[in-house]
Image: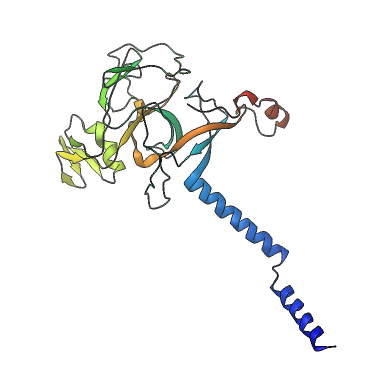
Length: 284
């Protein structure tokens, strides 16, 4: 065999040895797909399945939403920081967020932002004294509650409010100096916890991290979220303010929708229940 042929054969053998196996190529592709999905889900977009009717008729149970994390800025996992977004949450935005008491993902409408004062009188909502109309597809499905009829499930505890007669209540804003007392402790108890403190009320004195406190400076903005289906929504009227750190994103459009009550094994029925007219619907 000529020296040229030997060199050629050695080169081909070397290239064959360097070529990755089919299994390794498959594993590389899988790792790339997982990393790409993680980055997209963390920094760009996320899908969200609506499980309840609290936003009905604007959003239906069984709707699947594409949620933009770029709108308000993506949250960095573990470290708890947020990257800059296109804008801040505005009044009347529909927002996906982490419910601060349970840790579940919720979707509601932001009816009041940090620094605004909210009040509900005879079901009519007022923000800074100006009536805020019911959203176009919003609804009431039950009987109105009378005034001066406190609901023990309402936020804050012991307040003389119910879902149809509420407030006035000011939404805390970053930089606010709160005057703390036994009378308003329940308004700010969870806020203090959300900001990393242990809060207690002992003999009429507010105690923060083991020390008496009469004032507190708010460290982040808060929002008041309410469902468009006003009589069938567990929202800020029942569990309070949503901290800015819990904001996940803004829903953009519905990419899939079907009847959530049908089991997945009922393939024919499930496919027959697809709401084709809702696919691609912009959420607002």
